[in-house]
Length: 554
Image (cartoon, rainbow, N blue to C red; front, side, top):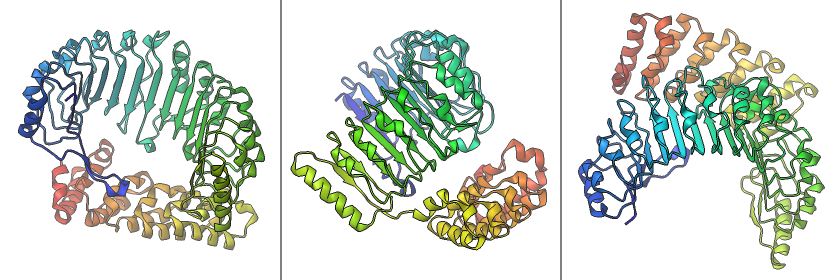
């Protein structure tokens, strides 16, 4: 056997994730499985075996082992024998219980990929460049820390991924040692918890990467960037650009229009606040895939329909209500994904696309007659030998929310606008983030109270400034929800007085069902604002209501 897969992912019904892999095992069981294949195994995956507290000793006998994943286990130390394995090339050790950086990693001279988690109070050793064969470095940062200034000396490094998973602190700048790097092909800088909006110096990154002649792929997610993002245009050799959930100043497309070597362009996230895509595609003759989602544009630029090599067009969660007949000129198009928009019909020219294989029109507002006509036309093409996969589920889904996002509230009376907003929040309480508080005036607080009673998670999308003194009442109501343990982080404590925040916290403690609720108060900011007596008061209310929270009391 070359691969021994003992990974485990637990079930999460809310996220639609089914349990998979091997259930939790103890060290003895895992060691037995490894021992059975120790002479031939090349890959061992122990990901998420959280009962595992140390690396099984039998692994040191796996002389053919090339790839080892011990991430998300209970392991506190990576023993030296791991790095003495003669063929080890790939190591993942993202473990929250690791005491410090495994310095012996530098003995693994054949290592080509390292995925590691940097825990709080760690330092990253300057010796990382002593891994001469390293091609892929993935670092999960759980603390704000400077990277070794000589990291760019890794001359064979092709892929660098930095994931910032901490809530406070700056983003480390891209190091000057990467200037003119001979091998770097892909850079990803990602904040998966993008609501914290840490600032990213995109100008500094672009200026360094523009000197890397082999750089082809750049992926950024979750940061705030200033107007200097226009320096993106310096990275002329880019072939793939993925920008997700960035909060830029101005229109990000203004920084992209000169990147005429792009083959794949992905812009996702409502944070871009793009209302119109500039007509810039006439300079992008190499573009093969364009993906755009989350912004309420109402039309696509005409130059998009002139791309000679476009194979995939993906437009999601927009205000697009129609496609131009010129889409039929995209003869290389193989996939069309126009979902979660407000399309009622598609142009007949779509059926003239000779290479079309997938047509996805889910979550629009086609009626049954329109869907039947589309099926009929696709059926006719099928008889001629062109097979097209059609998906069209959930027509009418969230249509009021989408219409709210593109409506002209200035043309509506306040009474009609209030009704319009009510219809949208009945579909989804998070639609509250798309309403115009100024237009609603006094009705905004009433709508906010209505959505909070539906879901306390809507706190994330409520505007405290527009509510004024009413914000306290909204938070107090949200605190009565049994889901408040997971939603408490959305409460803006800076918009509440000390007394108000204390009362909201106690109310939440009386209804909380999560075990880590007290983490909300184990922060430096809370300790500065309130004394120990207040902290103890919240803790005891929490523990008396939910004893499981006692483990988080400090």
